[in-house]
Structures are given as C-alpha cells and as structure tokens.
Length: 160
Length: 162
Image (tube, rainbow over all chains, first blue to last red; front, side, top):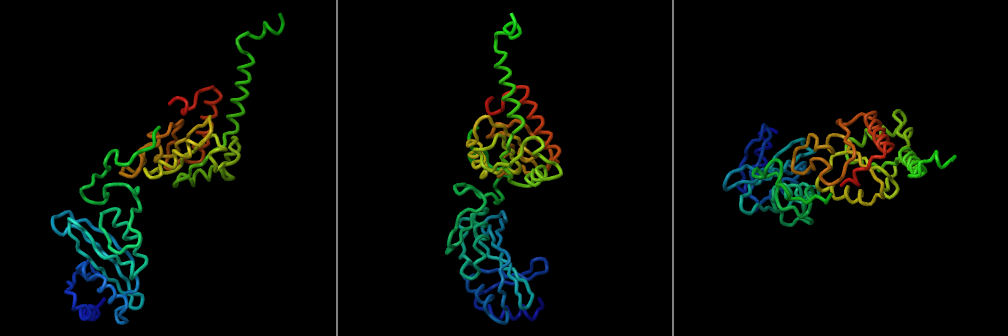
C-alpha cells in the first residue's frame, strides 16, 4: 500500500485522532474503542478506500498493567487489493468494545472466540456466549495468567 | 453307568452352553464406532474392502448404541465431548466392551492441554488400548482378535470389573 493511499486514509479519518503504525510491513491504525464503529464505517463504505472485507478479528493479551488487551481487526480491500490492520487497545479491568457485527456479519464468531478465550466483551453483539469451552466455564484460557495444563476440576467429568 | 459317568455331575452341559454363547458372542461383535477425529479414518479403512473387518464378524457398524456390543472410541475426546461419549456408553446393553483406539484416547496423545481428557479411562472402563497415531487398520483388527480370544477364555469385560 503506497504512501498516497496512506495519506488519503489519514485525510478521511482526521476527526478521530488515529495513530498510524506498522505491523511487519502492513500498515496499522491504533483506534480508540469509542470511535471504532465510525472509523470502520468510513473505511468500509468510502468508495476511494473501500475495505469491504473483514478477514479476521483476534484478541491479544500483552501481560502488562494498564492497557492489557488488544483486539486486532484485519481488513482487506477487494477493489484495490490492500490490507490494513486496526488495533483497538483495551484496558485490564473491563475490556469492552462495540461489536462490529452491524458492519460485517462475519464478525459474529470471531467476537465469540475473543470473548471465550480472553473475556473481552462486545456491546451490541446479538449472541455473545462461549464457543469452544463449556458454557458455564469460569476462566478465560488464552490469558497469559492461565496455566498451560488447565485448572484441575474446573470441568466435571462424568462418573466412571 | 453310561452317560452319567461320562458326564461329571457338576455342570458339563452348562459349560458347553457357556462355550456356545461365548462363540456366538465373539464372532459377532458389532461395533458402535465413536468416530470423533482422525482415528475414525483408519477405522473406516479397516471396515472397507482391503482390510475387511466383517471377516471377523463385525459385519455392520451399528451407529445405534442399543444394537451394538463393542464401542470403538476413535479420536480425541475433549472435556466437552466426554459427557456425550459417556451417555452413549451408558445406553449400550450388557455385555459391552470398549476399545480405546489411538494415542489420544489412551493418554491424551500429543494434546497435553486444558481441554483434552488425558485418557478416556478417566470416565469409561476400557478393555483394550490400541497404540498408534493413528493405528494401522491391521492393528485395529489385531485388537479385535485379542478381544475375541479373551471372550473365548471366559474373561470378564472391563465394565463388570469396575
């Protein structure tokens, strides 16, 4: 993605105070969770940018105080064949962000996975529940403070 | 004189009927294939034309637990799936045998993690463990033959020993 398109995106998104960074060669935007829906709407619907496709939405746990969790959304433009990452930084105590299901229906299960594995809540999600672990499981396995082999007796086995 | 001397009074006919029942049981072990993961492919290969499992009596793979004798658990069992496997096992009528096929069912296999049960013998009584990842079809046929010989020798199945 050349510098011209990066400048065009910066121009369209000046209201939102985004920071442009780089993840191993692909440009990335650090976004505030309050404005994420507006940013994604402009990126999706503007005909000069047109990132129509949401490829992936992942949770990240950087095990540090303050800004602990991140949600990284990967967008792709079919028209211009470009990729971009959007990083939403969330804090430790109450990681919450608006759900992207109003723009992309496919974000449904990605957000369920991020909720199941990290505990990140998505407001406005139609059906936020666990997808891999049993529904009444109490811990979040992919956090860095979860032991590798699990917590014994956290899931009951049927009797012998 | 005659027949009564030849027969010992302590149950000659009983043991013969016993052998007849054992013979009929061992030669018609209909499996309930609990094909969960990759070992199920090798189980299908054992049931297909080249390694024919119906040579040994397992003519049909009854996917109903009510109509089967032996449950072949093939594939990784997670904690979430363990309830389902146990429920199906409980629905099988006696006598029943269980084969734990592959590394994942014997001991958790390569998945030493929070979601995989480290061996199905934590919640099911297992008769025979088959090693391999996945075990070759001949290995599975050998395990079936071993269970048939155990039935012939009159050994109890694991569900009675628990």
